[in-house]
Each structure stands twice: as C-alpha cells, then as structure tokens.
Length: 454
Image (cartoon, rainbow, N blue to C red; front, side):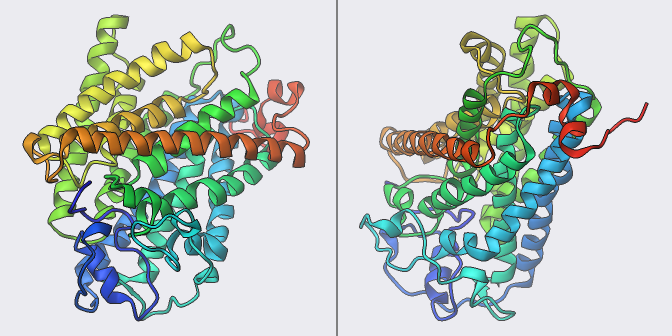
C-alpha cells in the first residue's frame, strides 16, 4: 500500500466551500491512509489556474479534432462523417449529463469513510447535481472549481468515444447516443469515483497508483469496446473483404493531435503547475517516443517494413501505458514502459485479434485495453524508488494491488457494458444498421450526407 500518493486527475477532489482544508491536503498528495491532519485553507494560484485552463483545451482537442481525425481516417470513405458525428453527438449528450448529475456522482464524498466499503465507495451522491454550490469563488485546491469541473468534463467526453473505435461502421447513431449515455452513467463516473474521489473510494483505499486514467479511461473503454465488438458481430465481409483506411493522412494528423493533447491529459492531472507536473510532462514524452520505437522494431522484424500507421500507433501505445504512471515513475521507467507496451500492442493488434477472430474495427481494445492493462501493471514495478520511481513501495505488493484493480475494472466493465448493450438494443430495436445501410455507408444511411461529392 502506498503511503504517499501524488495528485491524480481527481486527487484534489471537488469540494463544497467549507471543506477546502481537506481538498488542499489531498492536493499535497497524501493518500487515504495518511489523511491525518488539517491543511491550510485553499487559495487561488493564477499560474495553476492558467495551466489547468490550457490543459482542459488540450484534452478537448484530443476529441475534436484529434480522435475524430484518427478514427475518421481509418474507416472507409463512406463512413468518415459518421465518426465525426459520433464525436460531436456523444460530446453533446455527455456534456449535458455531466452538468445534470455526472460531476456529482463522480465527486460527492458524502458518506465515504477510509477503509469502509459501502455504497458511497462505488458512487457519489447528488449534492452537486446541476453543479450546485459552484460559483466564481469556489476553489478546488489552488484553482477555481469551475476550471476543475471543466477539466474533468473533458475526460468524461472523450472516454466513451474511444469505445466507438471498436464498433465503427455498423452501429446505429441512436444506439450510439443511448449506449454511451448509459455507459457514462454506470461505468465511467462510478469508476472515476472509486479511483479518484479520495479516502473511502474502493480503488483508492486498495492503494491503486492511478495518476491520469489507466483503469478509469483506457482499460474501461478498451474492454467496453471489445464487448461491443463481440455483441455486434463482425462488419459484413470481414475479414475476407479488404477494408483499408480511406485517408491515412487524416489518421496520422489525428494521432499527432492526440500526442500533443496528451500533455493536457497527463500533465494536467497534477492539477497544478508544479514539480509533479514537470515530471509527468517528461515521462509522458519519453514513453511516447519509446512506444514508437518499440512498435516499429517489432513490425520491421515481423513484416519487413515499418509503417506510418504503425509509428502513430506505437506513440499512442506508449502514451496509454504511461497515463497511470506519469506522476509516479522516473525517466528510465517511462522508457521501458513505452518500449514494452509498443511491442505488446503490436502483437495484440497484429496477432491476437486475428487469432481470436473478433472485429475490433479501429483497435480500441488493442491499443487502449491492452495498453492500459500493461501500463497499469508496470506502474507497480517502475514506480518503486529502487527502479528510479518516486514511491516507497514493495514491488510485489504494489503489482498485486494493480492487478487486483485491473481485474476488478475488466470484470465490472465487461458485465455492465454487456447489460447496457442489450438494454440499448431493446430500446432502439437493434444495435446494428441494416445490411443495406451498412453496404451504403453510415454517412448516407444515418446522416444523409457524403464526405466526398465526386
């Protein structure tokens, strides 16, 4: 069990005015087991605030245009607009739900007690429904709570859209909106609460090292994508009909925007412009570079030639891996994590998917699910001070904690996602578009538009 926990994306949990001392203490990085004394009341820091505003914009850029271009470039030309529309549509729906109840069930700590497992360990209450108690003077640690709520909203927006990479080119738009709304409510927000809300949260009390979303975002979305791909079934013609990306330039530009935006994702999770943010920035960049090399070396040896899409995928694999670790590991740990995860994700996408025969259209599970699992487990290794990290941990014990958290996330997400997909299918009278609509393409059949009028 870690005795010192650096700030995570929600280590400085949102708080109503009057509990600023507790939130400030959490911002100093003390875990639930070390929360033993009061801290000074929070005061606004303009530098921290400015950085968190920039981080929020960077994470939003990861969704639109980053993920939209990355996914849009990899589908066939007849489906590119459907991907963009899903990004915008899901963002709109989840953004509204975040205001109505999402922020509250993520952040409300009423009834939570360190070491006690109850309903509040899994999900927050509704004290801050409709963003109640947030005004211009509300602070979360050293930044306005309005900025913190916006930053956390961007995480909530992009995570459900990652799943869309697995069911691309075959799911009804109405089903996409309903499913992602339900999934946000019953998968994303509860897991974020369990990991980041502070003492009394299930994963927090277990001692998980989770800086910016290895389990909450990547494993959660990746496993949901795999379940969705299995429930919907393969695209018609897969794997016998060639389905190459229609515009690799779009995909590479999107991957580049994701790489840049990831600094908001990871470094912003320090919730301050401080030494922890600085190290998170360095380790994020190192892991991304190492991920490129790890992927390309294996691809070069296996396929004879390195690919452009492989280089981009390797960078994303490294970024996924370092997400839970960036505040806990040192430069050498980030290097090893990027190299290892880049290679592992290559085999997951190039071999495992073919071996098992599932149609994860854009490899959401192969990159985010597998990369998140590898990254979370390796966090328990390289976070140790004995290997250049910053945590006083016993490696075997911490890896056990990480593995327990990963297993819980996989099982919880898989079961809940399956139930929500079945429920969605009942409401929308089927999850998939018809065979004729799939053949025509979702741009035309779902949105009555074409990306290219030639």
